[in-house]
Length: 379
Image 1 (cartoon, one colour):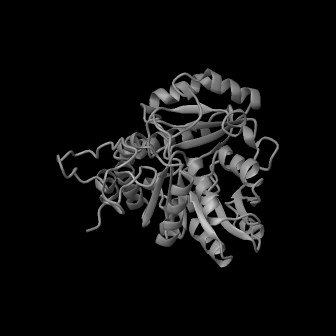
Image 2 (image 1 turned 90 degrees about the vertical axis):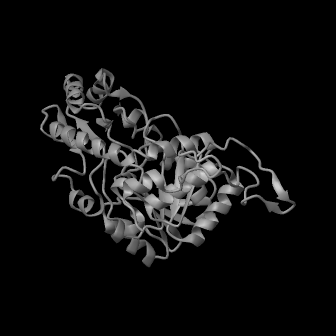
Image 3 (image 1 turned 45 degrees about the horizontal axis):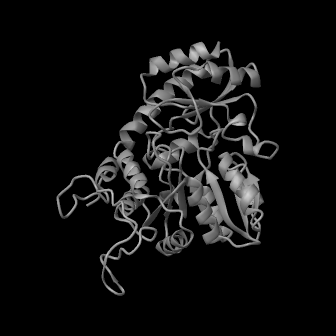
């Protein structure tokens, strides 16, 4: 029997515990397991780097929500990305990356993977021709974010999947901004989905984690092997916290979207805002593509301050209810200056963000309070 998203979020991988009937999966806070005989681990568990029941419950739920046969939970989103790159690529290979992407992802490519021999080319992922032109014979991955971080660009997943596959490459989609509630890239042809589960999936700013979901079971097995060999696994308590957050993902995302739609419309008509980036606005260049592949348009908004960079910094500093902090996707609203905070590592690169840019992670508070805070912060 097939189930709806919210049913899967609450029940997938989370049957009552067999011995006691506990409704919530236990935290298996153990490093090792007693074996029934040499070479006969009980239920396959031998060491918690290789397998842990709490992490397995999270992985089963993530796989169900993203529609892939294999999901793996990691210590962070960047740990998941690094494991993926070293599983699929080797020195001398090439990856197409977004020209607008999370600063940590850019740092991984530019400061770590490039030294290891992995080449990359930034391309505008909302421009199919630009992505196609960036592909080389050595390209192993076309890597996209949609929406992108922080400019909220939109990539057509199905079209780029065809472009990547025609070139013999994999399409990897970072789905962090959308969450599996709003968008399921595997259904549109993606080969691997990446998440920072720290963000919307966890949803409460109290745990760090990452995930990979593979569309192909064979690739999933390769990723699992490398995860065990490299060791960047999600701990049992972190997995438990993330799984607790998942249960309310659908209802939280609906409120995030409700609030963001109101705030985007408000900012779009404000005299002290030069430009608003939100896929839900009909004026957004990716609006039609987003409407085709997303349930709704998310809780992330970026805007450019009409008074330039110092004005943008002033807005961030004057906000009160919007907390000045990095990260995103929690129940509380956050504000930041990407150029000096999350994307400082991209300064001077093709991924450098405008100095007048402000990024909002719109939380689930009473929206009128958020609007009032922005009104006073804009000055």
